[in-house]
Amino acid sequence: MNSEDLREFCLSLKCVTESFPFDETTLVFKIHKMFCLMSLDGDLRISIKNDPEKIVQLREEYSAVNPGYHLNKTYWNTVNIDGTISSELIKEWIVESYDMIVQGLSKKLQQELIEKQ
Image 1 (tube, rainbow, N blue to C red):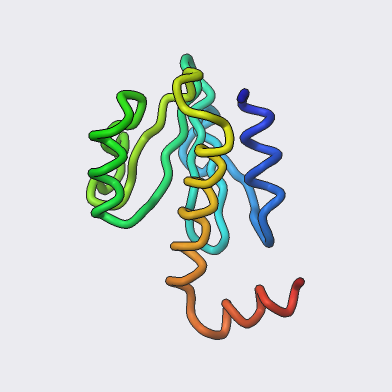
Image 2: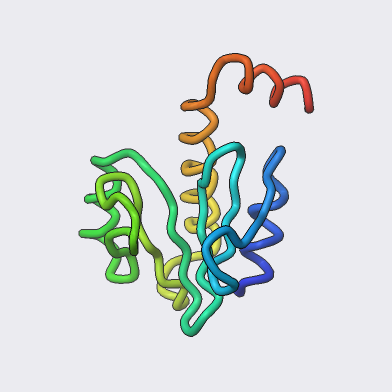
């Protein structure tokens, strides 16, 4: 999995936008709020949000999963995309992060997403 594969997958999710709000080396994908950040400098890595209990479990199970870099470590992990974790699993985690953000949106914004199907 490379940066373009990750980018295309994130953008395939409903109503996702991309931007560089911090600097030109961190691409951010969001749906009203960030759900995935991709580092474009050096080694490829993404930061994704998840349930606090699962965050700890993933860190213990995968050496490529670390506390979120410059993010709230209770909710965010940074994943090194080094080939040790399958593309399918990484995509699953991205979708979980996306879903977590959608669930946190107001009912009005959630309804707007449903209407855009």
